[in-house]
Length: 294
Image (cartoon, helix red, strand yellow):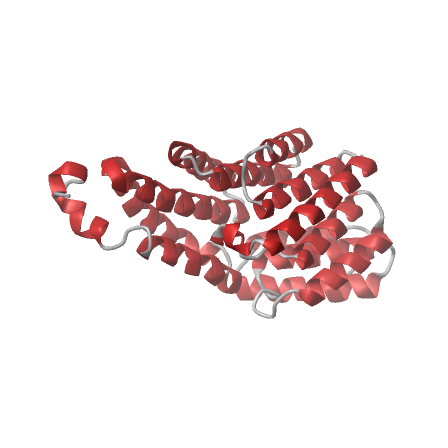
């Protein structure tokens, strides 16, 4: 393979340095780093990395192109997640669209389903129930791995819970459990970007759905159990802090002010450690509810 056949000479050296391993491995490491430092500090570095990969995607031809597309889709998905978690919704949508486009070209059902599902997550953040359910269903129809489809099923359940549909909520949560069991049986089939998925994560998801349904006592039990079982290196992550916020919310809805206050203190601590404006806003909003917590 000669430089002029597949890539301009300016990117030849980068391309032949195991492109699929170097940038993708860096993306895998960045996923774990986000658990520690939060989304905000990684936005600029991830965007810089993706700018390089975008150039490679544009220029790549021949047998190396699918490998470069795979790397690019992972980085686009990751930058979309960072943007969504920082509530830069338009940027998140743009990067999820890019991940979907590149994954479609390379025929990667795991990333296609993930991009659809994360776009549904973006709709959840905006409170748009219909697209949450519809996009989750679209993700679940892809020939993706069991773990990826489990994520779609639990998010669809959350959408049904927001719509006040308890039977559909439980049906999809049970489907997510079955898919999660299948994923545990064949971990080699799962993509690296769902490293956080586990039965304990699904326990928290059920707790969140039950909170939306007003089943707050069950929600508290499930959220407490799921949070307690989280790996130590994830417990103080920004995204886990969102579940602590929902735990505080469930306690507040039960009128248990001391427990709600204690949970919010932990949310505050995670917000400080990760620099999360989103967690700060959520905690402030809950504290503003009359008679909840000071």
